[in-house]
Length: 100
Image (cartoon, rainbow, N blue to C red; front, side, top):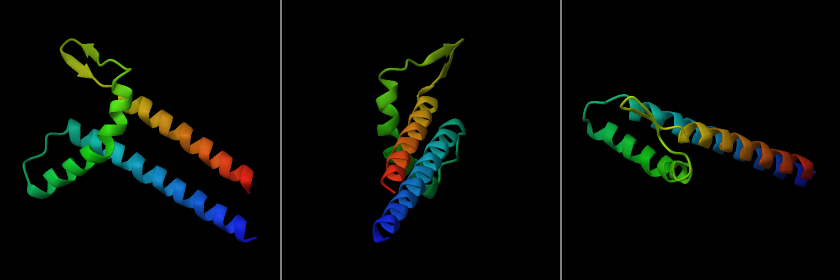
């Protein structure tokens, strides 16, 4: 029974980590769309989101070109990154469930 409790704890941790990172990606997208006034705290939050999310998104930006719609650039890498994040979460949760 202790092994099952440990696996449940790991599953919960992985799921919460997935949700927090997903929330960071959405916050990064919103702060990149909306021009915020300069504020020290807002700047720190934006910098934190950039430092946490941008390395992951750069993995996909190498392979997915930016869509050009009449002078408007549309970056599709966050959509693909979120789909991959969902797939990895499902894979890890499935593997942990098989150990259960």
